[in-house]
Length: 231
Image (tube, rainbow, N blue to C red; front, side, top):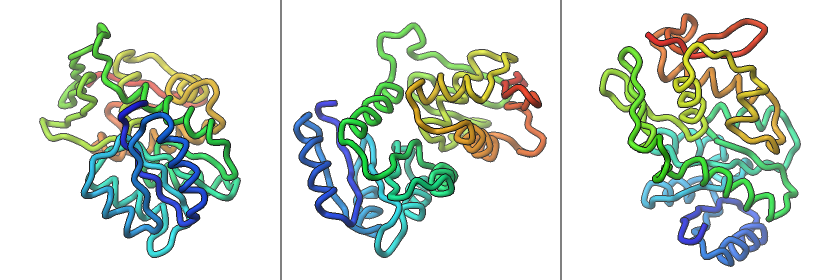
């Protein structure tokens, strides 16, 4: 993770100090913000590899910050929540977060989550899939550049939304259970549940489907899971 740039956002300065110290031990570049408005300013003015974002912040909540960041960036966001509250986690995903960690947390867990996301986000330079383009109907997926287009217009997908779509498009008509998608995209050690998958599928459909309630691409096999159908 050396050289990666991270923005840490939390109003508890001791937490920020601890995270910053630990990440800098791995030669990462760390910026710190202590309220929602400052976080947005940093995010707009800099290019980050990942953002650690607390839910409860002064001026703007973490949810509001994440929602606004998604208007101009697809940078991976990990939400930090002080409550083991399913609604907080679901809301974070709804607003565009890629992952969440519940406080109090072990810094080794934070590093493991960052590494896992970085592995998935990094272009596979030596992979056989490098420079691969997948097309279906008016949709085009650039696997190497990790960009998606509808009618040649780029659509803004989060890291996890892209990974879900890429997996489904590479395996058209194959039905994946929610449990299987959770394991393949989020990893077998991910502590969340299958509602994470449902939230991401819903948000993905809102972005790529002309009518999300009658999807053209990402379909539901009732009682089984989800699959991609070529247009």
